[in-house]
Length: 311
Image (tube, rainbow, N blue to C red; front, side, top):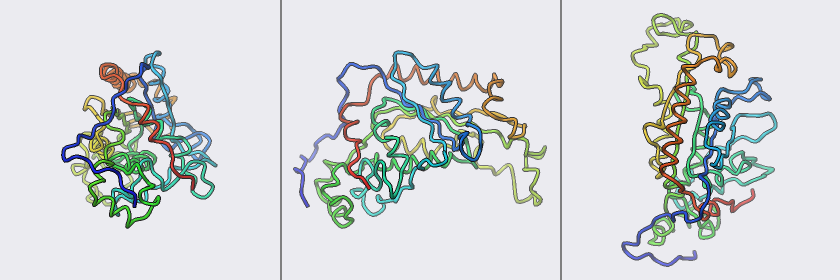
C-alpha cells in the first residue's frame, strides 16, 4: 500500500477558507417523494415551498435547487452499503460504491451531481414532509449516502478502490490522521419539515379513528411533543459532521390538519396564510444567518467531490 507522509504529532487539520470573490451560494432541496409524473399524479408541497423560497432569496446570490421526487424511468438514490462499519478508510469521499450514468446501478445521487453541488454551496435549505414520525425516505437515503462526508477517505488509490483489508490497515496507520477530516465542514444546513397532524383521521380522543384496539395507541406516548424532532437524525448527523444547524433554522409547520388528504395539496396550501407565514419567517432567518456568516465553500471542496469511479 502506498503511504503518505506521516503528520507531525500536533499537525492541525483544518479545511481551507475561500479566498475568491464571488456571490454566496445556496442549495435548496425538496425532499418529498411525490411528483406529478409518477404514481401520486401531483407535485408535492415541498416542491412548491422550494420554489417559494427560491423566489424570496436575494437576487445577487447564486441559487441552486433540486427536487428529489420520484419519477417514472428516473434513477433513485441508491442505498448506502455501510462500508464505514468495516473501516472508515473503506468509506470513500465522495462515495465510490456507485458512479454517474451507470447502466448497472443507476444512482440519482451521482446523476444529479449532489456531492459536487453540496460541496459547492455555502449553505443548504432542506424542505420535506414528516412521514411516519420521521424524515422522507428520499432525504434519509441522501443523508445515509453522506456518511462519507464525516471523515471519509479521499484516496481510494491507497486501498485499490475497495479492498477491505487494505482499508483496515490504512485506518490503523499514522497516515490516516492526515487523510481523514469532515469534507463539508463549516457549511450551514437549515431544515423545514411540515406535518398534517394526522389530517382528518384523528378523533376527539387523539387516536386514529380506524384503530379498533384503542389501548394499543396511547397518544400520550407519541414520540415527539415538538414535531420538528422528526428530523432530529438528519440534524444531528449534520452537527456530527461539522455542519452548522442553528436551532432557529430547524423548524416545523403544520399544514392541512383536520382536512382530507385530497384537500391538502400544494394549491390548497396557498390559502393557508398562517402556515406560509411561518415558512416565510424561517426563510428570512436563513437569509439573515447566511448573509452574516459569509462564504464557506472553496474551489478545492468542489474539485474533491468529483467521482473517482464509473460502475
